[in-house]
Amino acid sequence: MATNAISLAEAYVYTKNGDFVAPLAVYDNDAIIGFVMIAYDKKIGISSGNYLLFRFMIDKNFQNQGYFKPIMDKVLDYVRTAPAGLSNKLWLSYEPENEQARFCYLSYGFKETGEISENEVVAIYDLTIEK
Image 1 (cartoon, rainbow, N blue to C red):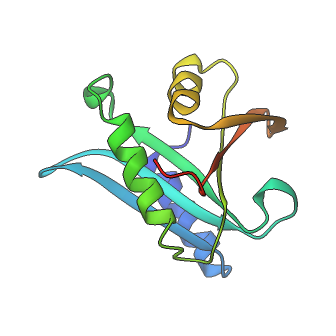
Image 2 (image 1 turned 135 degrees about the vertical axis):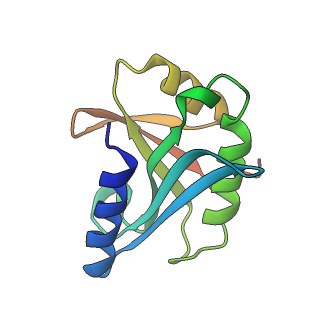
């Protein structure tokens, strides 16, 4: 799992190369409780013309406190504004052994595609569905 510092460095490099990447801090009032990074991908396959939830992190001190759904709701709200272009899908990947991530994403409405990307399970969310 990449640290936030590595994620910010990656965002800088991708942005310098002309790609869209949005690293976003997640707050609850004045406390930073997490970090998300969203990208718009132009590659072939599932990523082509779709948004990627590149990072999704909730600080260990704030996990299991009901933050997942409201953060995902905000991610979808943001992606639906089409900051880098229109899209019908948001995709992500996670390590196969990360059962908690799998449970959270699938219960939110992501669907596994059967694809593996860099040894991670790929799942997509249909942005045409209202949450």
